[in-house]
Image (cartoon, rainbow, N blue to C red):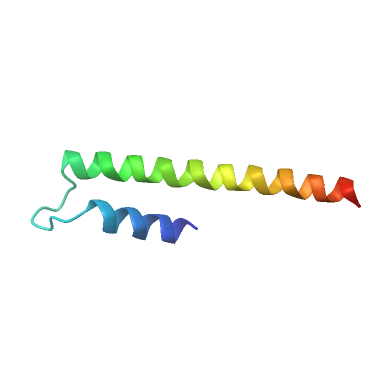
Length: 59
């Protein structure tokens, strides 16, 4: 999960390789991308737990 997060956010946000450090806009993009990815993962996990709980009570 971590590797795909890093790769995706890097590919989406970093497009200038003339500097050794990230530009401010690239840094902001990476932070937003990572937060979005982690929030999505948490939501999917919670939803999966809800569905799993419902399935267990139906049996």
